[in-house]
Length: 193
Image 1 (spheres, helix red, strand yellow):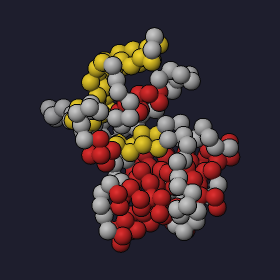
Image 2: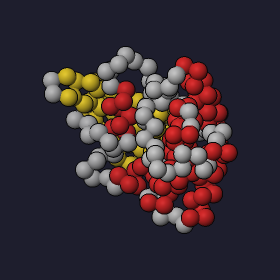
Image 3: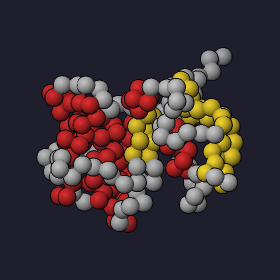
Image 4: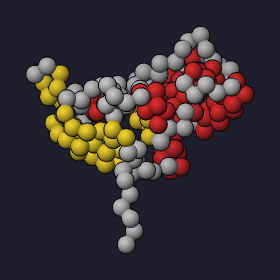
């Protein structure tokens, strides 16, 4: 009999309210390493709130969130360390317009991981290549399509080598023809686990 694996992400009885409106009503979920999970629900059903809670951006009212065996409590956990394990890609690209695609990807590596320029550049080039944008390292966000900007945002998260990648409606701000290119990147990443 093989040993039971500890889930990479485990949610137990998660509750969250905004005033009188309870958005998360006792959510339980376990995600194993390499597993891909999609949450589907109507607008306002709590999907983004749940993802933000896993990343420590939102405090829950009750329950327990564990990532890689560590309890996520924004008041007690080192959020910088948590965010090195948990990458998040938002609906909005949140790219710095005065930085190139490569510089946007390199920024967190320099600031959070304190890596030297050569190491950060190599990681950024690799991450951009992974999302099909290796040739756009020196392009500014204004020179990129919406789909390309979203892929830079994905590369930025990937460069940090997170154990968990949370994607919050990453195609909702895109034109329909750009959705396929971003979903193709996500599909490829899921296949690579």
